[in-house]
Amino acid sequence: MFQPENFEQWQTPPGDGELRLIPIGGLGEFGMNALVVHTAHTLLLVDCGQLFPTEEQPGIDSIVPDFAYFEPFAKDIDAILLTHGHEDHIGALPYFLERWPAPVYGTPFTLTLLASKLKEHDLNIRLVEVSDYARLSIGCGEIEAEWIPVTHSIPDSCAIALHTKQGIIFHSGDFKFDDDPVDGRKTGEARIKEIGAKGVRVLLSDSTNIQLSGRAPGESMCKDGLAAAFRATEGRVFFATFSSHIHRVQTALELAIKTRRRVCVVGRSLERNIAAARSLGLLRLPNGLPDNLFFDAKDLRSYPPGETLVLCTGSQAEPLSGLARILKGEVKGVAPTRGDILILSARPIPGNEIPISRMLDAAARLGMEISTERFEPLHVTGHAHQDDAAQLIDMLKPEYVIPVHGNYRLLQRHAKLARQKGWAPDKTPLLEGGRCLQLFSDGASRLAGAVPVGKCFVAQGVESRVDARVVRDRLILQEDGIIVATIRLDKKGRMAGEPTILSRGFVILNDDEAYNSLLKETVRQAYNDAPPEVQMDRELLSELLRQSLKRIIRKTTQTRPIIVPMILE
Image (cartoon, rainbow, N blue to C red; front, side, top):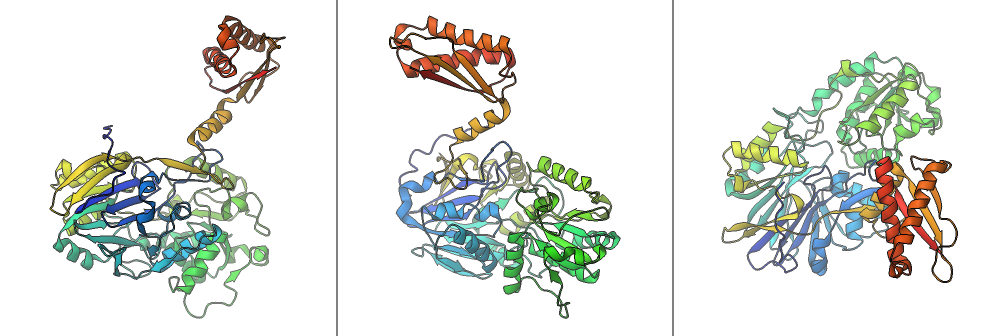
């Protein structure tokens, strides 16, 4: 893959008439979406998301962007603008705001979700609520931001149009075109066309589903399948979805009412989001509801199985989710059994397939029905397919089409789509790896190179970020174990007695005398062959022993355990 040269002047503020666009996350991965927009007088961030750790990052709770770009400009940060409230767009905000408090702009439901996160981190930040089609001056007023409604899998999603001296920058956020959304709130196509008629300099567009042909199906497409699953199930319906997917929750609650099922909600985030959506009028339930539509989990056994719906979090097999706790028997009163059905109404996030498979195994062991293919579709995406992406390009006719939100192959596929529609290769750059696009008010533009970007690992209860080397060592410990080699030195620096070898999690056990003898002899030989200046230098001797053991262990076992030499006097 092409590696851009570094943008050497990135620590120097932009000059008059210059605008920098720098994605510092969300390109080359699913999550961690964050875009820097920087001019001579304004510095802002569009979205600030987290990436969820995989099994390859043991002991890590969250992965957030490296915000190194902001260090030289800390006093100049004007705002964070949010497209919507999914974790991959707002999850890193507490870590950014604790370092650089700045006002955050977003729609009501988005800010409601953010406010609860900030409360957990004890942060008092100014939140500026915006409405659909709002257009506000940011900072000194050099840039105006406009929020345009789009349909997605969470309420209040928006695209953001930045009106700048260098032209209009249109950020799609996560979007699709849905002609029949559950909440009736459609993508603002008329306004998008008006903006396109004015001339758009740059379109940054969602690439998550760009590999899929046609248009993304509307949310109503999954209603029939869900209704059939509810009707066909004689036992309880366990329905897992994202806690923020209020449109899907709306559908599930409507079906519960139609099939005369009462509802138990398991999962704090789901309870909180349902309450917030109802207070904002985003979750609409029909009049004349039974007074006891909702009931507490501990009372589940009081109702016939065929008259209950258990709404829960955990569609991605999150270990602390409501569904995970249910399957472990940790939710009092909720015990799945034969005749119950488990519906996962969400697409697996790439990387979660194995944990989800294990979770389905656990559900099957309890007797739950997990084969739901006959009812498909039970989920539809919230992201644009190829025809949606092409339609947005046609509506805006931008100078630049920049793919965002997705791994490299998807970004590449999106750029190819734009080129097939007539955009030149130099007008569809992939700004992965911190590449900076400079725009100038005289119409000029250039790819300036790359600024420092990367990932920061976060573990709850640890004040500082967890270094990537720590994560690597944890993974090695998990896979190949640890070997501690100890030698004793007398007062003259000579080795006294025999080396000792202790291992944990290594492929060869401590009581394997033959292999232990091999390692002891390796240590002894390495010490005896070392020059006197190495024998007398703790650090040099320790590294010599480590490298000697590393070579013999790799040669004999093809493993790479953590090796810890200990030198005692």
